[in-house]
Length: 313
Image (cartoon, rainbow, N blue to C red; front, top):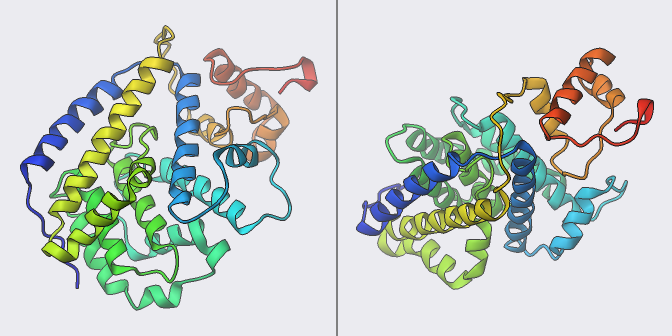
C-alpha cells in the first residue's frame, strides 16, 4: 500500500533552507565550459562507482575510468555492462530530463529500468505490470508538484524501494529516479551533485533511515536523512568549485546549439576524441557545418584541437 505521508520537521526545514542557499551560490558561480565538463565527468564517475558498490559491483574507480576512456571491448563482463549502463542512464537523464516539463509515467519508469538494467538482468516487464497501479499512484503524488523538489526526490526513491516493482536492481533504479527528479527541477546542480557516496559511507544509517518508513509509518525520518545528504553533497560541490573553478571566466555568450550540445554528449569523457568526419556522419551535416561547430567549441575552450589539416581531431 502506498503511503507518502511525512511531517515537515525542524531538521527537514533547516536542511531545505541551507540547500536553497547552497544551490543559489553554486549556480551563480561562473565556470569555463571545459571546467564544467571536467567536474561533470568526475561527478558521473563518482555516482557510478559509489552507486554500483551499493550493488556489490567489484570494479574499482580506476577500472571504471579505464573502461570509459577506451574503446569498448566486444565482450564485456556483467560488471562492465553495469558501468556502461549507469553512465548511459545518467547521460539520458541530463539530456532528456534537465528542466523538462514532461511527466513521469510507468512506461518511462520501465524504459529507465531497461536502459539501466535489462542487458544484465533481462526484462522485468511482466513483474512490473503487477505493480503498475501502485507505481502510478506514487508518480501521481510526486508529479502533483505540491512538495519541494528535494522532498519529491527523496519520496520517489524510498517509495520505489518499498514497492520493489522490479525483480532485480530496485535500489539502483530508485536512486537514478531520485537524480531524475533533482535534474528536472534544477537541483542536481548541472549534474555535479553526488549522493551515492553519502549512502555508502554509513550503511548503518542508510539502513536505519530506510527501515524507519515501516517503523514510524511515514517518511519523516527518511527525509531528514535524505535532505541532510543533499545538503552535504552540495557543500562538497561548492568546495570543489572553489578548488577547480577559479580560472577567470569571460562572458562570451557561449550558448551552444542543440547539435553542439549533442556533440558534447558524445564526449562525456574529457579524453574522448572526435573528428570533422565523425560529426558529419553522426549528425548528417556538411563538412562546413561540422567545421563551424567544432571551431566554435574549440574557441570557447570546450574542445582542444590536435593535429593539422585533415588529421585534426
